[in-house]
Length: 497
Image (cartoon, rainbow, N blue to C red):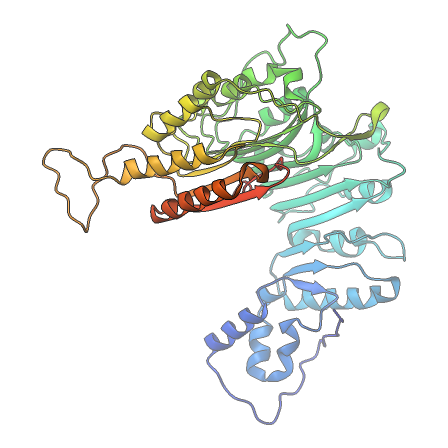
């Protein structure tokens, strides 16, 4: 997309112009993307270039809120001066508004220009939201050494720390660690995303963990001990995301922590677990009494699901949990240990979970309304019947799963919904063709995503599936059925925010 210049001086309006109500013009500009961030260098299709159309258009387009969110794109050295000039103009037009700056994948440093010196530090007091990848030890250290308290308006930050492909780990001295001050004295910060891909230890950042309501550690693999230290300090967090790497402990009889760790305000948690069966001690220590959404992604060389582990996580969340997402990692993982840096393809071993284990687990998540199951968890016939009657998961409305033979799942959904929507013989209950009286205490399913192998769906089975789908849709079920030659490891729509 070609770039264009924007002038700091208002251009003369044409001799003749049509006057529209401001509300109409705002709708036109919104349709053209005026509420989207300013892309710098400015693109030729940006609606802000319409300012010269008339005085009325100019007054509306110069609204400060249309200029205070900027997305930077990479530019060659000869375009740096244009980018800086347009950035200064956006600063002027944003008035006194706080700024949202997104540097995306922009590579910076060199060319006598750095984002940190020329843009971030110079405007630190006004920055409210900052998204910025940091490449190389020099840029990383320059950012971490910004004096404490400079980002007094900062509320949300998304920072990635990455070295070159040849040097993966940063080598900072203890004295340098002690001087990392950028995250100190930030009174308004509430949401932090950290992508530590250079070996930097999270606790060396001196982040205000106790202030945060959202904490996303990205792909930063950490030990269970480090997870406990961080989550214990982040007492106010409501949303959290961690990747935890488990290894076989030298002394499995010892506790990871002297006492249980209870995060009282946490409502949504994403856990990426690498080989969790190597050391399950963590799951006996953590408690989330207000947890509503839990997403667990299994990563590791063995993709086996030990339901007892996850039963322990949910022991204190049975009343609050509403959505549960269990998933296998969809591809190879990178082993970050220095002595064994390589890509590891997970073993597809899938020992079956017994129906007793699964029913015990379902008993702990009785109140959920959305469930995603990995392909390694098979729903047995006795469990299917209890799902039909609502004895298990009575509030379930959304189900995503895979099955070697999907007929029993489709039949379960149909029979459950027919049971829920059937006329009730309750004494004294009236019934007419215009109103259904529900006879079952359980909810009907409104969404089903089912993955079935192509090999199990011949012409006859295909017709059976079509008939079942027709009935399900008549019962108000939104169905997505995927036929595939190879069952994918990750299925469904993904966890919903």
